[in-house]
Image 1 (spheres, rainbow, N blue to C red):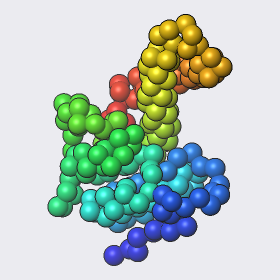
Image 2: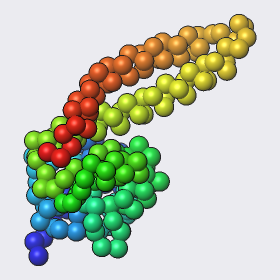
Image 3: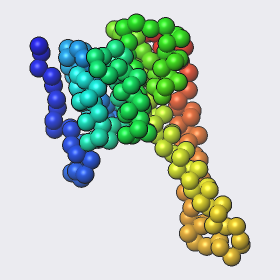
Length: 206
């Protein structure tokens, strides 16, 4: 069996605060076929992603607990824990994780069902590497949008509670208003960029 590439220099504990080079995103690859893991890991690393691979759901859970990944690419059919089961457990660990399920067998109906379970996208194997780049880029932006919208609603609710009375309006309140406006601009910008996701939904089989 081919040796699994671990790339341990990119796999660090969440508490580590050393400076790292700028990457497009942190990706966990899960597939019981080690050759698939190695191929995807090598490709994504070459595309400037931080890619970590593993061959079981159990190993993936341990890595998810130890490291804050942006994305998880997982095979659907795996022994002991399938891709949907893994995704459910992964989202309990990291609610902002974007999960992409890869399957050798699937239909539009099965893809829709997997997305209802929390998958960002379902894609057929063998996958198109160029299409994969677009998928990952959209997933990263969708993750950013989700986090910004949560922060926006949190600040908006906080501001509403703090300025219930005119005398509570102060410099801190004004600063939060500016932050909310900036967040709104970023959210609208990301929504425009994510129009590519509409294309992915129509061409998910590619």
